Figure 1 (cartoon, rainbow, N blue to C red):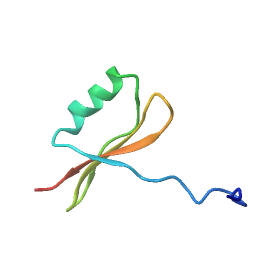
Figure 2: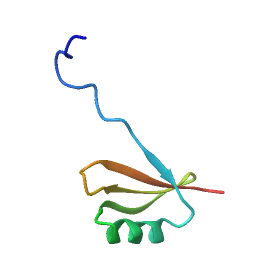
Figure 3: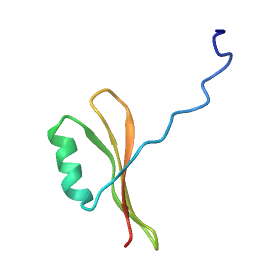
Figure 4: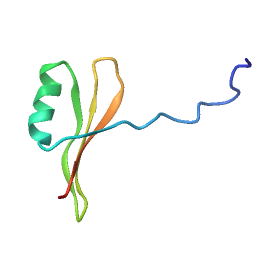
Length: 66
């Protein structure tokens, strides 16, 4: 194998789909995570929030409109 030349292509995106973003955000905080983007509505689609886990990985919470 040969090392990659240049900067990495980017970070993968991970999404967690949940029915109660506020409750999930509280679980994240209690487990040592940090909420980066609080609950935001996405008109006509759903809602989202971003958090950082204790190891520094950024993930997204997602609530799909029913």
